[in-house]
Length: 615
Ligand code: ASP
Ligand code: MG
Image 1 (tube, rainbow, N blue to C red):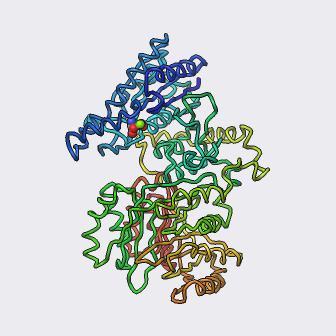
Image 2 (spheres, rainbow, N blue to C red):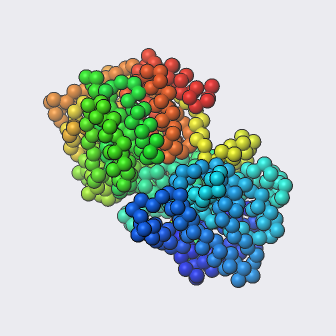
Image 3 (tube, rainbow, N blue to C red):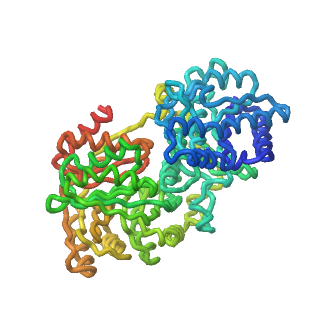
């Protein structure tokens, strides 16, 4: 029997009428022959109102009591939902997070799930009940109520689907029969799916039918606020197909599924704007092993999620480390970093008026020239780029906040995102059919269930799956490029025109000038140098260009790498301990890469494998 986990967000349970509508949907799903678990968020603006209540009492309310308060929002919803279902004549029972044994760590207001016990839910389901669970909350090992961070009900829903699917005890009391792992998760919200970008900003944005977990993870992390990132990590890690759809209509939503072959032909699937970012640059830090480790360890210790990282190639023994954080974290960041900067005799530069425009697409793994197209679109729109980072399926550009919306529109247009992919490329006609889903179902059946079941005991632990070393590329660095719209674009146009494929790109603004580095195949390095020198010469005579043949790139692959601040810390820490200097860094949800001296490449690979227990 199929098990469906249905999650209703705040707007979907905002008033009695909507609660009744959600209840009817759950009942209908049960009557179609499924077992049903309903996860609910707090009604409407309840969580915001509760936060406001706390603020009226205290500027900085203690986190434990905050969780005690916030968890009540969802508790109201579960009771009302159970009443609604019962009023309509179907059986239902409500549970708090604690009652179904959602155990988390003790990081109040940002807790991570450690384990979920399925016994009580299985029993109630076997008993013919619709099970209603409060989203967003759990308890720690000392019975303190915890919450999972804003938007955390999505994570509860997908995590419940994951445990119900993979729990070894799954066959016993009959949530599903043994071996039957047909579990799906439906996220009901006030939009009817995932769009190529926010339709409130770009009206021609289009609803996608399918998107891969990785694409969704990257999009969510760069500001597409459809779902809580961690819920997608769960989906990916535990093979739970997720459908995002509207609670107000029966329109098919967007499926979030494993990556399928056909997706690689779609170069860019979506674009997003992160409005409230802050840029921090540490200028004149010693170019020595261990410096970035100390910076990012300090961030991790304070639970600050660092986003774009652009570590520059050093010169004269000094380097600059640039990164972005959510705008409201800036005061914390400055407090944490000031003592370090003082110790190093370095300086901090920051900018609170920045936004981040990103593009995401699986096709970037195999298609070239994507960055160049993006930069050209931004240059044509007269948008200046303050920082650039690339990852395997994502490119992010930091721009001035005033330019944000214009930049997003320009990029959305440049990649033709308003048209369905099949309109751009007839090979993608599979889009209209349900083929992608069938393909993904097959992947799921093949998955290694036992390994997954073991992981359930530590659900949110980082999964680093692989470390790779590549020494096939060299690097071009441009020091002191003018900070003006179009400069970077000119460089990449010239390099592309020479037929040279660019991979990793890192650009950082330090002291009013831009430093830009990118990697190209070793064999093209000399040509890339010549071409870059030529074009840079026409922009500014004082700009210096250097080529470096001896670089090694290390890639750490996994899930949820950015939000688990610990991954970067472990990685930089391991390299620092060996005295291996990092000259470039870039990060995404699914991959962190660093560049080190080629001579230290093998050693770095070995040390990272050890650090992540992959030997
Ligand atoms: N009620 C919580 C919030 O608004 C959790 C959720 O809605 O997912 O953040
Ligand atoms: Mg909410």
